[in-house]
Structures are given as structure tokens and as C-alpha cells.
Length: 403
Image (cartoon, rainbow, N blue to C red):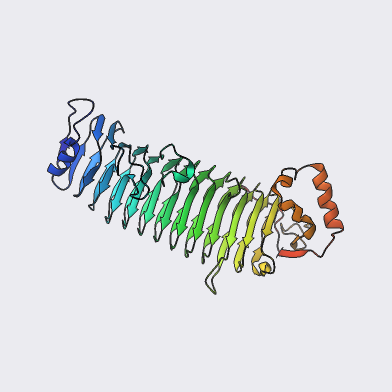
């Protein structure tokens, strides 16, 4: 592979020198960029490696449009700082745009002051890894998305660090692996729409408004993820709307307004969602059912420290047709006389009409107080109305296991 070294004449280079070098380079060449600032808004339309070596080579846009546009297969961008895209949402101004390409690598770059970070449109079999991405300093709703995957399949998006962007979106895209990413202080940590057969594993999302939300999607595995402190009126850890044949396994969801949010899922007839071995801890609501949601199987999960373990806001929706077995409940009040680790009696959870006042978020602030504890005790002892059953777990675990 031929190596072309670009030597700086001054700290800020002529606007055309990098694009000219790209145009002159032979397919498959490697351009090693010494430290300095290179004018951006470049287009790469041939197989090429662009290597900044230590992120001190900066490709800077002019504040309009996209800084680097890739229109060829087999392009690698690595070890660069990419900054100063435009601010137009309609054009999807981005740090890096991949358009109708395959087998590209975007590795270990720093993308700052860009509206959208990495925009992928009809881009398959690419590797997006170890990048730091932050948007422009706008209000959260008008920032761009850190990573935007649009009609793009079979990609690996791993080990990226996302800070103060808007969303990480995966729309109309299938069989992608999204793993080991960290997202903080954004809106949607991950937002899926019309997708299938994706793998979402070992990501950490902290202090975003929403953790992972699956919409109109199916056949996906989400495992080993940690979602923490998704707060506010929209705050939730993992949500599913009209989503079928999911496996939600070995995740930790803690300190969220709602841990799991389930809306008309599974959606397709004769399908199930398997929700297993998750730790659902210290949330305001552990699981929130909205609308008709049947055939979810909850096994071997840990429910601990939640204000309400399960909430159903849409009554007469046959919520009891979900299946619960072998979960740990810190609210379970039974015994284990034979010491087999399973409660001697089922754990049955009811909704008391008397508790509807708890839906007032201002009152929930006082939930841990002695007065509220006494009210809860008397509500169970002598309910004003017939309680509504939410679930029965026939084999509640007595030991929560290790986190």
C-alpha cells in the first residue's frame, strides 16, 4: 500500500490541499496526516485510508454541510479530530456521512461541534468503533443524533462514547451489532424503529431521558446492558412498543422513573417476549404496562427497591395473561419452610383502587416516609374496594442472587 505523507507548511492549510491530495491518491493509498488543521467539507470517492495517528490532525468544516462525506467502499478514517459541521437538520449536516457504501471503518476519531455525528444512509457491513461524539451546544431537542443508522444493515457499532448529543437511532435497519457503547446526557440512548434481528449488548447508558426504546420491531436480543438514572416524565430504562419476539436478558435497570415500559408488545400474534435474568432496581416503577400487552414471559428477574414493582395504566386489558415465574421480589411476604430457595406460597400482586392517589408524582416524593408506610399498611389490611390482580408468580425466589 502506497503511503503519502502530507507535510504542513503553516498551521492552517489551504482549503483545497487535503481534497487535492485525496483526488491525486491512487485507490488503496494511505494518507498519514501530521498534526495541524485541515480544511474540511471533503469527499472521499475511492478506497483510501486517512490516518491522523494521534487525533491531533484536525479536519475542520466551514460551518456549512458535512465535514467528511464517504462515497466509496473500503474507506478508513482513524485517529482524527473532525469538527465544525453545519447546523441544518434538513441536510443532516454531520461530522461523517457514509452514503451507499460497504466495508468502511470509522475508528478512534473525535467528533466535536458537529450537529449529527456519524450519518449512515444505505451503508452496510461497516465498522464504527471507539469514537468520541458530542453535538453542538444546543438544547437537547435540536441537537443532532450522535449516530444515525438509516436503511443500513450488518454493521458493527461498538465502543463509542457519546456525550451530550440527542439520539442514537437505528431505523429501517437489520442485523446490526451495537455493543459496548457509552451514552450520557442525551435524549434517546438508543431508538429503534422498523428494525429486526439486531443485537444490543453490554452498553452503558447513564442520565439520558430514555435508555433503549424499541418501536415496531422484532426478533432482537438486548443483553448485558446497564441503564441508569433515566428520569423525568418520559424517563424509562427499556421500552417496547408494538415489538415482538424479543429477548431482554441480563440487563441492569436502576434509578429510572420506569424500568421496563411495555406497550402493545408483543404485537404479532403467537409471539412472545422473553424477559429474563434482569436486575430491576430502585426505580419508581419496575414494569409499566400500557395498552394491551400479553404473552410477555418474566423469569428469574430481581425486583428490589422499586416504589411499585408493576403498574398497569390500562385496565381490563388482560394483564394477567403475562407469565411470571421464579422472580425475586423484595416485597414477598411468604416463607420457605423446606429451604429450597423458593417461597412456599405464590407471590400475588394487586392494584388497590385506594392507591390511585400515588399516581400523583408530588405525593410519590413522600413515599418512603413513615406516614405513607402506615397508609399502605391499612390499605392492604382493609381495602376500600376490590383489588385488581396484576400477576401471580408461583415460584418466587427467596434469594436475589448477586449483581
